[in-house]
Each structure stands twice: as structure tokens, then as C-alpha cells.
Length: 217
Image (tube, rainbow, N blue to C red):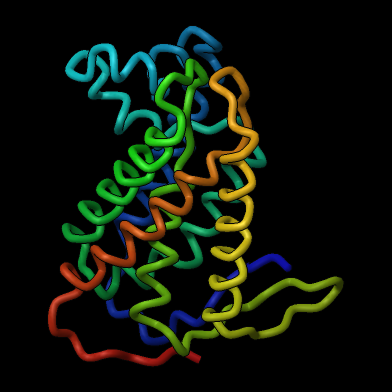
């Protein structure tokens, strides 16, 4: 089940921030690939290093959320941002959306940090920030419809089901990862996904203002 789009007929503004974030992620990935391991170690978020010197490592709270482990990681994240980010930006506005996105990414990083205090493994990826975007979409467009690729066909499906299933999978995987966590073992940062989603859910109620809800179909 792969989301490939949604209905944008009610969108009022050009999602410049969403497009800019996608472009920035792609450009940063290209720089990351050319810089190799040295670049990754310098700009990714490393829990033990951050706790040892938070002030010096502060920039990695931001740089890490624009880095990716590979093309599949980048592609899947940007697909979700492209599908859901424009609608959330449309509702929040450009400025609030970029603030929202960055705060969700930071919230995701700290959620992962709580469960990996002594880890020396680089943490990177936009997944936590995008998880926050998914939560915002769910709050503001609860009756939205998402076009989903299933097998050889594309079917419309409730955003509540698509995002709900995604979050449920992250939650189950996150619980499982706690029991097998190791300071020297890499993998998917499920707790970052959960933390970003929760941060996005909460922040949406503070940032969305008093705009009347709209339904997409």
C-alpha cells in the first residue's frame, strides 16, 4: 500500500515551503554523498556526542533532518512530504509551516535521544519532521482521501486509515525496538517517528488558528 497523491482542488496557495524543503533535502543529499562518511559524522545527530557538548553540537539538530541514508530513504520521505505537506502548508501558511516542520523534527530527535542516550550511531533523516506533517494532515483533514497504489491499481482511501495504519506500525515497531535497542546498533529510528507525530499533533492545535475546517475528497 503506497500513497501516491491526494486531492488538491481546494488548495489556495502555492506550497513554496514544501517545494523548497524537497529541493533542500535533495541538494543536501547530493552534498552528503560527495562528502562521504566524514560529512555524515560531522553533521548527523549523534546522541552521546550531543550530550557531551550540546552547545557545540546544536547545529546537528537541524542539519540531521536534511540528511538521508540512501535514495530509497530520501525518495519515500519526499513522496510523503509532497503528498501531505502542501495541504498542511496551505492551512498554516508559509511561515508557520516552516516553524512547524522544524519543531517537529527537533521533537523527533529528542524523542529518539531519550531511548539512545549512550549511542554513537549517527541519526539522520526527515522522517520525524514528516511524521509531524502527517499528524497535522490527520487533524486538519480527517475526511481527506488519499490515492493509494495497491497491486496494479490505484484506489482512493481515507487519510484516517492510511495515516492511522502508518502510525500503528511505527508504534508497534517502536515498542519492539526498545527491547532490542543497543548503543552500537543502527536501524530505523521508530521513536523519532513517534515523537515527531506526537509533536505535530500537539503543535497543530496551537498553530492552525481559527480557520474553518475544509473537507477534501
